[in-house]
Length: 110
Image (tube, rainbow, N blue to C red):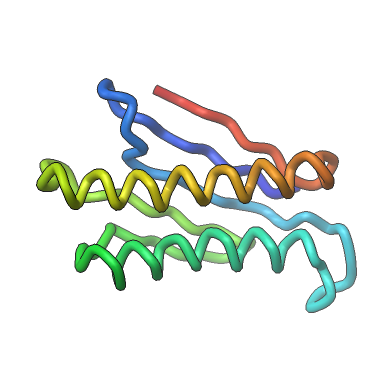
């Protein structure tokens, strides 16, 4: 199962997210759930870097592990853009979860 943890700070802003695990929906290289989650999560990180100019803290590892942490104390305009992109990522991941809930689980932490 793919587990995604979304961490919000005290103001409700998304501070970080972590993706780990494999869906095991299909064969390696043919798993549409893994491919979808990867495309959405990496696409969000790439969009943040490209459209805002900031570089989040990124860690990658085996078994589908991706951790992304936003820098603190961003200018308000930049923070708004980052949050919009991250909230968009969440909507996309929740859409995948609605259809493939046996293979992906989102949790939210404060």
